[in-house]
Amino acid sequence: MASSAADGPTSPTSPNEMTLDELRLHLAPAIADAAVFDGWNDTALEMAAQQAGVDGDVARLAYKGGAMDMIGAWIETIDEAMAAALPPAALASMKIRERIRSLVQFRLDAVAGREEALRRAMAVMAMPQNAASALRTGWHSADVMWRLAGDTATDYNHYTKRAILASIYGATLAVFLDDESEDKAETRAFLERRIDGVMRFEKTKAKWLNSERDHFSVTRFLGRLRYPAR
Image 1 (spheres, helix red, strand yellow):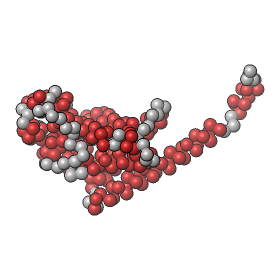
Image 2: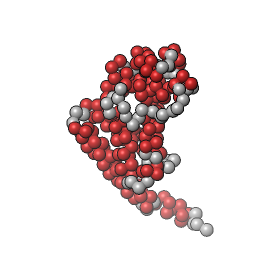
Image 3: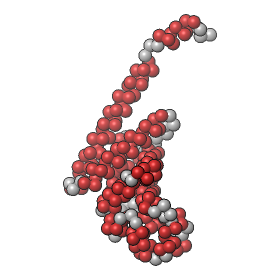
Image 4: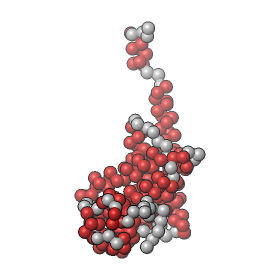
């Protein structure tokens, strides 16, 4: 079985004593291991349940949505492991680009060794009937990353930041899956380039917004002549 930083939260509770929500997360990494060979299906679920000593019928109740529920649970364990390993306090001394790079890199390291499970998961998520659920899952992971990075934006930047990060992460995963370079060097370089591009864009956007804010407005000037401030 592959091991990683995202093997889910440890618990002294026996799997047979867990709630369905707890069992859902507990079994997810083992299902991912089995999905490398069997795909995200009942066979992988049965194997994970057997390894954990859980009745297969009970395990199926934890994933009523089938493959997407299994994949979603796996991603949630990665979200939780990332939050535990890289809390805001641990990232506070880093520049924002380093915070984002560290968070994305943690997620890549977490799925290393399970590339085929990831490939199969992305194929399932790409199915038209799963598009909405996949979008919500990607958005949630991007939101978790930005919150850990210290983002508190509530205006349109809240949405653009998450959309851009979800795009970067998705593109990086695609490179990661086919990267056969040593220590995934090509993926690391790709991620750096994408983050560089976003940082340049943010700087340009900030300058443009400041320029617009300071730009002389004829309409505002005429309005003040007509209705002078008191």
